[in-house]
Length: 537
Image 1: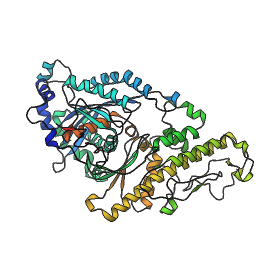
Image 2: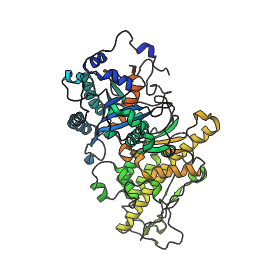
Image 3: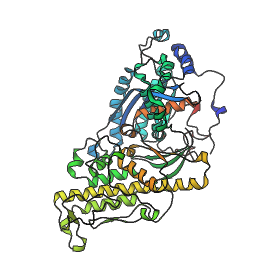
Image 4: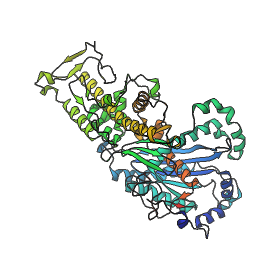
């Protein structure tokens, strides 16, 4: 693998035309370079969500020895296409949705742009400050959906005479905790009421606003760290050494975790709940169904899941025997291969769920399912307490008993899937403890992607790491609204790539499959010397 040769792609003989036009129209460019402020408009259309965001960011001068990024969202909105009739994402419907709503969202974002108050803006006859950068998702994703967002982004970049950055979608998920930290600093600085020109005054007040104690409690996210990227299309454990250097430790070649949970949910959820949903985020509905008493917005550490993690590898690969007569085999229980595989678990779950509709067909008393008057206690094996007298054999289940068995199956499915994720994380950490130097060892596990919003997932990861000797590893996950696809993460990643000196060409095309791994055939985020994905600005 060859990283792009900067000297070959950088044109030093003449200033790029878009910069000449930018300097001619907008006098803030020189000032921007000095103050390192950046205003980014971002578009995300990789799947069925139409997203636009406007992000303002700068480098704080509070800590000279290690400057920190501060950011605030001026606009962030998403519209999700209605795909319920298809039971999943239909590419043609997603494209039509993007075409219908993207321009409207961009128009709304433009109305949120800061006012232009210099002579340069007056000469340009624009009432607002134009963005400094356009960021747009380039891949991976559905090519037709990606192309819709990219064409709009290219048009805006041309019209405003500003650079464009095509963003790697999964890299954006991986960097979302950094965005959250920057937004938190913005809140501490009360930037919403402070003009950008008074940044130095605001920075001077940060210590009084947040204090050193809070800083110690929330240390910065520094490289290297592990990224667990879990969504409907990806399941990857990635070692992130820098903004553009990533190594995939473990991935899946078949079905992604989010996709498996979606399919399982369509089988497990009662028809009334399945049909009443407002979208096709069935995995999120499965979590709500499994834990109906979990309060919305509560952190997993504040809720008692009654979960006991497997303390050893042997306990981790034990078959899960339910109190209802069926059992589940953990994924790859007979292998330590560094991969994720959810196909077998998904098939088992679907067969069990199908059988729940045919209780009266049981003829062998030993195969009759257990019905319960109350929900079974949820322990390490999701098993009822030994002295419980509520269990009884029945050839047919009442509706409320069937609901409880489905709820149990939902919990068991998630537990085994999440423990499978944790098992490979433990293996990586164990290997690092033996072979890596202190600087290469990770101190943080970042969990991102749509499935990262699952609070039970966060709980299982934390508890497993604790009992396996890695309780010192900090687990970071974005707020729920930033776990799923959004344009804010695209804006942040585009801004970071621009600050690192990278931009995209206007002739860039969508990339359906784009590996993050720097050692892969595609060359990772930057691409190869023969086929670079970025050029030096």
